[in-house]
Image 1 (cartoon, one colour):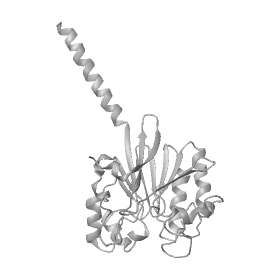
Image 2 (spheres, one colour; image 1 turned 90 degrees about the horizontal axis):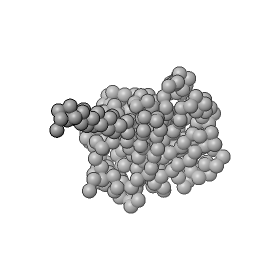
Image 3 (cartoon, helix red, strand yellow; image 1 turned 120 degrees about the vertical axis):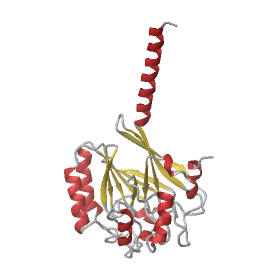
Image 4 (cartoon, one colour; image 1 turned 60 degrees about the horizontal axis):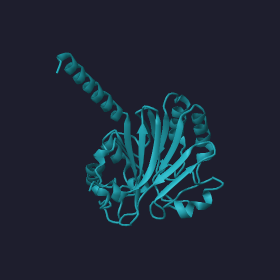
Length: 278
């Protein structure tokens, strides 16, 4: 074979492989998983333990990892051995079962209970819906407003939280709380409490949407009654939730596919069993 032709073929092959690798790099996969606790201390749903979390580019945890996740340092270390919660790409919205010692959580993760994180053109906002009984107020509300006021270039704003705070006050969804949320509507620490989502947060999110930034609110306090929830508001904001009930059939997680080249994200609910490598 002519040497020039051979070099041309080799160069073409190298360019193809380089382009193909870059194409693969433009596709990311994220997993949202919640309510993996059992009724026993220091344990996680046995099927969940078989998931290879390294197969996902990010892990989003919606809370209630174990029955008392932060009561002991040993339990936090156990959760870390499964979920790698110290990893910046593991985002954890605290649930009521994670809330025994938030100071210990902060020492362990090196992050506050609410914070932002930027990755792959997405702004992530992790909220603490246990801090003021489902409300976002005080310093956390100030934080929320600062972020939303200055957000300009992200393709998406993904808000991760435990309580399904957008059910309360919605003309269609509030009546469905008993059939959707693990926690019923009430006035207690584990309850879905009356809150300020539609008065203080939702108007800001509508302004974000007007900038061409897609808004997703992703919650984690389901699983005992339903395994998936999805609702799009007339303005185009998505309310999503996923969670499991340990030991039950039909448990699901929420899997996101993110195409960075076109700045688009899609999602599907997948059975936990289907996420386990055979």
